[in-house]
Length: 94
Image (cartoon, rainbow, N blue to C red):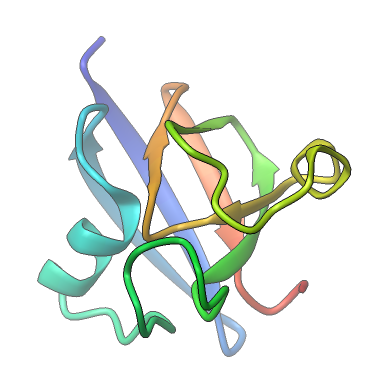
């Protein structure tokens, strides 16, 4: 399937939307009116850092994250694309 069901947890609220797997998570969150944290949108400032608690994401370039941080579920949503049919990213758990 080419779409993913996304849940973003931000300030205790669960925001849900669907997106294509070739789209960037932060871009689609913002286009859905979600005030997700961001600044540089290039994987450098780490403002968009979230923890993947369900599913998987793919980053072409991990930006400032170490392999250990990625293994712990951390992702930069400004450079992440979904890599499973469902994902949950918790901005509150970082």
